[in-house]
Amino acid sequence: MILLVKILVGIGSSVSIGFGIWHFFVPKAWKWYSYIDINATELVVAVRAINVFFSLSLVLFGIVNILLIFGDKSNRYSMIVMLVATCILWMTRFAFQLIYPQGSMSPVLQYGMLAAFLIVSLCYIISLIIIASQKIASY
Image 1: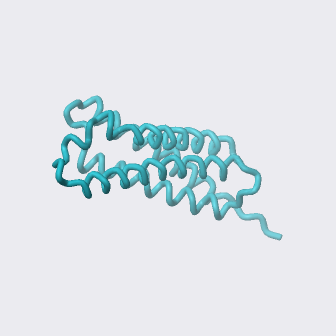
Image 2: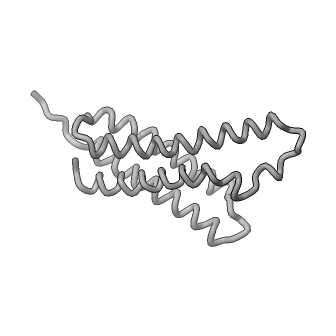
Image 3: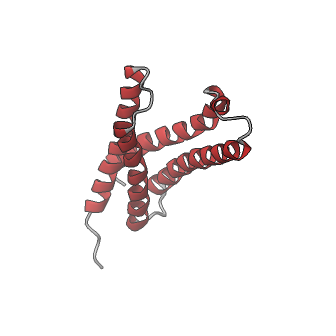
């Protein structure tokens, strides 16, 4: 595998895993449930389930990308499929931050998040382009 792809996927995946692990603790750190009506128990359960699913997805996407890029059993097709899915995930997050910004109470936070999402997206997009443009060996 091309060294640049390994570096870029390593960076993007490390950030994905980090965001995923961090996000497991976000509801408690930011007191999410204090904003929900005490009688809305189903909403609390739904928010908890969505956050766990999201957090775990980020961690798993990061791990799978690392395993595919650094493993010696991967094929080009599986790497492309996984990178396309990961690019869609991160570009969607970037688009949401652009259209509906979070952290608007602090420009540093708001634009820092935007920059982080763009950088991670670019790590995966550049890797995808490199792998997709590689010539397939003919037998």
